[in-house]
Length: 94
Image (cartoon, rainbow, N blue to C red; front, side, top):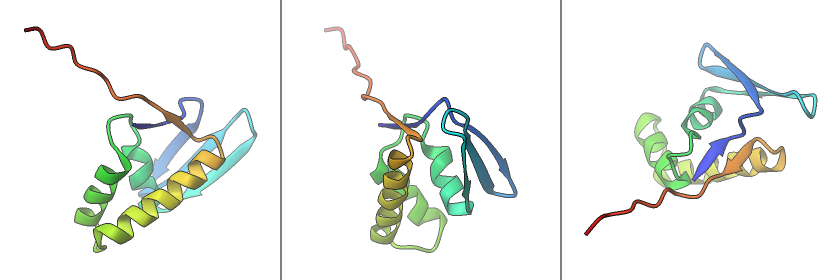
């Protein structure tokens, strides 16, 4: 699962977001689609699920949405904006 780096400050205004990495002294601007993806990076969604929801929300095929998600995630990783999170394991009592 993917999660936003908790050290990144961000604000949304008019469906667009500004991200600030205080450690690196860098800021990043996201358009509406980038902000949509960023907001889904809460540790509970896979890239496939994000692409599915994105294709249902915007007029785009699943394949194009997945490609866009993967490209943006690659940029996020390159700039240390993401944290990888292992999926939770449920203990089921017999």
